Length: 111
Length: 115
Image 1 (cartoon, one colour):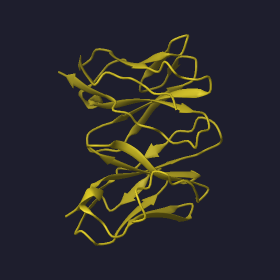
Image 2 (cartoon, rainbow over the protein chains, first blue to last red):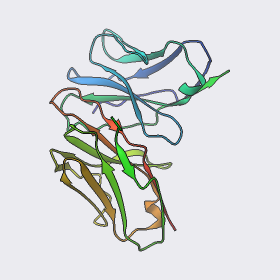
Image 3 (tube, rainbow over the protein chains, first blue to last red):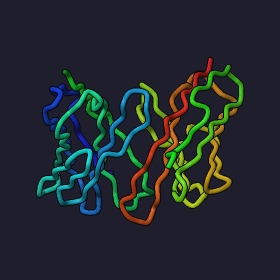
């Protein structure tokens, strides 16, 4: 599976957009970009995934560059409850379906 | 839907004792995963099942660990005998695998402490 690189931590202001970057320069054509987050003491929570096109759902937007070597997760209006560790995962369409979690980005939303 | 259900939520046991963790996946899902999370190693996959059959158990630490899925609605992860280094949070996740980009849904986890 392609490896991802994320900043270790970042802060953002409540009510502002949070932009979380992820590099996946070795991604191959059949690999999806997934984002999960883990709020303290809870199980990981699915946020969004995409292959080539930008995606949006009720939680976030995913922007994937044209060369697919990087992506950005956007939380449009961060709240205190968005404080969590965010994981960017690259996963082949059919690789036993397992998720390989890296270190993630620890996001702290401040009032 | 109740989501993935795990029990117990917390388990404290003594070294050498048998520990059994339980998981009820989301109804209709055909894949089930057991993960372990520690500070040192992060989140790592232990084993996953598809249609109740173990597909990949390469993440199972050693013979002391075993997992079963007797039917589509229940799975167990057993540690016998337990050791202090097994202390971790164990997560169960399930998904519907249709051969495409499935989404895994995680349970709340079982926090295991082995004294």
